[in-house]
Length: 150
Image (cartoon, rainbow, N blue to C red):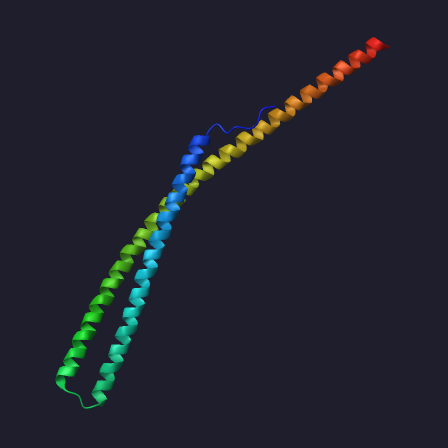
């Protein structure tokens, strides 16, 4: 009997490729989000260090220009932290969009897999029926031969 050939093989190939592409897009988006979050954490650590230095500067006699420079540095870091938060929010939206795209592509593949399984099961049933018919024909021929010989 002939081998199983899935009727939607081309569609399955295309959908699997789309799923792989969506997974790569999702991976890149997650990687970008992680980089942004890491940068933000680094900026927050720098900010905490600068605030501590400012606190210590108050305990020591220091010139006003040193204090002003540190204040400007702290203000700049705070701006960068806010920008990193905004970038993080944008990157999170990109990750969510990529996740939805991947889930949609995965669902499409699962539909094709379900159809494939159904077609394979039908093929196996049909093959079993054909084998049973063949066995019945063989037994009928044998029985007829035994009757004619007797």
